[in-house]
Length: 423
Image 1: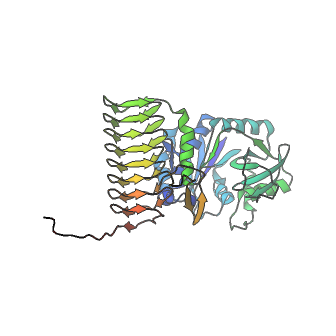
Image 2 (image 1 turned 135 degrees about the vertical axis):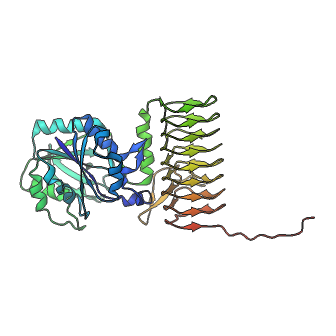
Image 3 (image 1 turned 90 degrees about the vertical axis):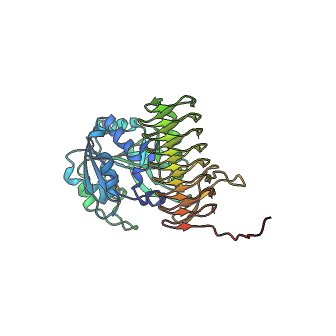
């Protein structure tokens, strides 16, 4: 069986993190979101993968190449215009010979789900097979109505009074090649896109066997910045000890820790696992890395720095006497000495964050900041919970940031000084 992975979109709700990469290439527990799908397919015998790319496709191609490093064979097709999921899947028509799996590249699943899907398809041989999941709040998803195992209706993001049920579409399918004929005839949706759910409903109306399996295996939909932290927390619970770098005398480690090749952990550092540290990092001395922290490659964390439950991407420096709590920090940032990123509101209420111009309740009591790539902070700068700083912005010394800062901005603090004779 072949597979098609959709990874052409940006993921606008993840900005500023996706201004420089597609959402599928954001790191969770030490590897890109997209890598989990590739690994799950490979582990279930699917080695021939077509990736539908578009936005910042160079990030995907650079990481995966021809797929041989991941034990698969990857062919790339660029979706020049992102006109919806049906349009994206249709781009692979010339490369598909038989039944094929389709999945969105921005989800993380238990690898066993792929095995369940393949086994169920071979047993039932439907025209289309969908994976569904029961959730408490289906309002952000497409809800699927079924009779037995047959799909009868798909309702996109139903309101609370729609009576649509709680079975959602996970974005994981098996199709026969006949789906391409239906894709060709799929009309534009109200959103101006060619959507695969409309394609499937055409099959349903033609009384083709469109069936569903309901899975309770792990399925993580990563759509907003704080969900990266939640996904990392869930995946790192299974982290295994692996120390390939150099750990000096005087380092204290509790719990599972993965330390990459070429990394040095300097004396006096205290690590409270699970913690993932990439390659060629320089940590300490006297740093404190707390549980569920995930550090990329080439990161420097200086003297007396505390990092709690955060994702720190490649090439970032966090200099001495700084605190980073429950935050996502992009690549090649420079966090100056004495920077404090707060993760708890003064009134102890849930943290809010602006997502696509809407103020959203994150549901998290503790959440720090989100920095795009290339952010620089000045000494003794501070950041309130839930703020975002766009790529390549610079925050001057002593600034207190309480609202989002766009990309490519310089924020400075102006002070009046009085100078007088002292003696």
